Length: 247
Image (tube, one colour):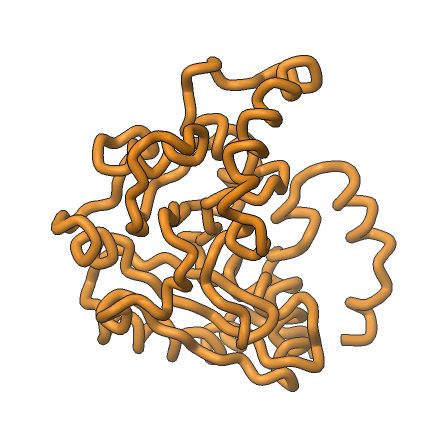
C-alpha cells in the first residue's frame, strides 16, 4: 500500500510541535545530519588547518572562478562570493539550514543507514538575540554580519568570534528549491557547545531503523534527489537508482 502525507505527518509533527512549544510561534530553521554524533560546525572547521587555509581558499577561488563561471558576483560582493563558494562545495564558514523540515529530514535519512541521524531545530532570531542582542534574521549584507564575512577573505580584518543566522542570496536555483538559509560562524566551536544554546537549538534523534521508512515517505511526497538537486546529473541518478524499489 502506498505511503501518504498522513504517514509523514505522524512521523514529523511531534518534532514541529516540540519546537513550537520550546521556541514559541517564531521562525524555525531545520538541519538534517546523517550521523547523530556529527557536530554543528561548517565545512572549513572540519579541517585541522582551518586557521591557515580559509582566506587562501576564498581568494584563490575568486581569482580562478571568473574564467570558469559566467555569473560570478561583482568582485566586491564578498557575501555573494561566499554563497557561491558554499554552493560549489568549497569549505567555508557557512553552515546550511532549510526552512523546510521535509528537506532537512531528507538529508538526515538518505545515507548512513546503520547509524542514527539527527534533525536539528534552530530559532534564528533567538540565536541572533543571544549573539548580538537583536531578535532578527540578518540580511547577507547586513551591518551586523559584515565583519564575519570580511574576515573570511581578509585575515588581517577584525575577527568576530560569534555565530549569526543569515538569509540566503539565491545565486542558484538549488538554494531556492531547498529553501536554503545559513548560519555564518566566526568560531569553530560547535553551535551545540555555546552557552545557553538550549534557548535557540533543539536536537531530535532519528533511529537508524526508521531511516529507510522516512526516505520512502519523502520520496512519495516528491522530496527526491532529482528535485532537491534540480540538474541533469541528479535526474539521471534518481531515475536509474535501484535503492528506492526495495526500501
